[in-house]
Image 1 (cartoon, rainbow, N blue to C red):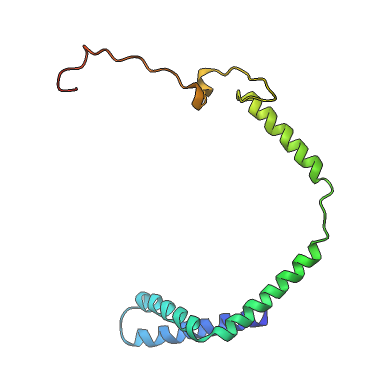
Image 2: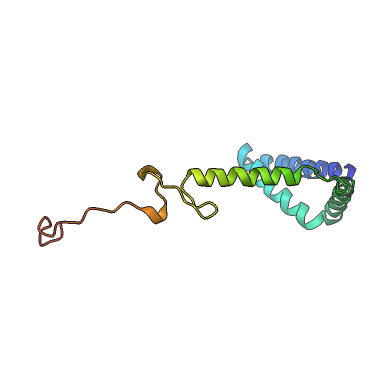
Length: 133
């Protein structure tokens, strides 16, 4: 974490220095802050590779250690939870009229699916005028 803190402090000091210089040119405090952030970001991308990479590698190593510690943790109830969720999903599908194990339940018009759209009334050709209105 020391490398990450060092990288963050360097970027903050870089931003503050650029912001101070830009405010001396009377371009406005807010505009100077935005421009300082952009310039500090570009400078840190171009010139702080070594510090950034050291911080990233340290972070990656810590993440790998954490994964190795928790790799042995096995959820013993996973199969029971999966079967419970599957049964619950099947019951919910059955309640909405989706076919479950070869049977289907009829649904009312308010819960019609894409295959069960209500039919539209046929238009009367005499009710429309010649111009299509």
